[in-house]
Length: 365
Image (cartoon, rainbow, N blue to C red):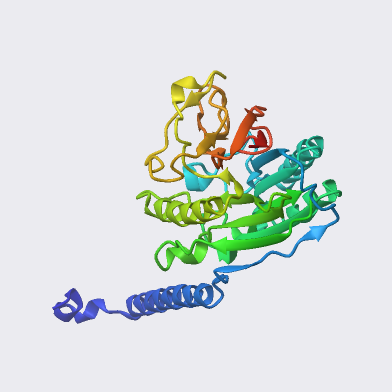
């Protein structure tokens, strides 16, 4: 029995109006929230598991007798995670840069990419196509314009109509993903999705992880296979990353079993096998990421990374050398029939992104 049952005189008109108004407001909030979840569910990005990648640009066919190649991998952070910024997902406060910062970061990214225009293959992650966080710039086309002599293909791994967090400044619409640039026209280009989503409804505002595969036919009847990937983060259990690596491993082993030369590079969101934080020699605070990559993944293959230089910084704070945590999660995994000639991370103090470019030179055995 309520207080008002004992003291009905307390239920005056103002009190009744207050509780009626409160009930209406609560009902509206519940209805709006349910409607928003329904909207996200109906508009959820549900890509086909495997499909062709549309290849643009103008580049010649590969010389089938060529044996040496160079590659670059770089997560450009949608031109929104330069050294001055933090990010709310990682414990920071911000959800996007100012427009001036975004333009400055992307101009810097384009200059860096343009300076590597002799690299054969550039594997880019987090190139936004139409996102509030990148001020609706088409970064994929912007990079394609800089690399005018390259063929290029892209694949969405983030396509959400509205990310409602953080409440103070929601990320809003996000659309972007992977981009591969090649100085040779691929004979085949595909995208494959891992289908390793977070549970509903979290998955409605999260990425759909995938990789792009470019294939080039050589004169020995074998193929050169280049894979660009960006694996799961924010996976505290490690189960999503484990599942993704299992799927990827089956692809790698299948291609290698056919005698092909295989290179997979990108942002793995895991440390490479053999990484030791105390090997970093740049004065940065370096840490391990748990859990480690399983010993069964790519067994007998080479993990190519620059052990002396961090490739990624944590975004819980703006970058401060020696204070901000750093690690290595950008690297290449290379099949046993490929020789590593050189690997180097281009350390520039995370000026334009929370990742640094990593460059690899290889020779086919």
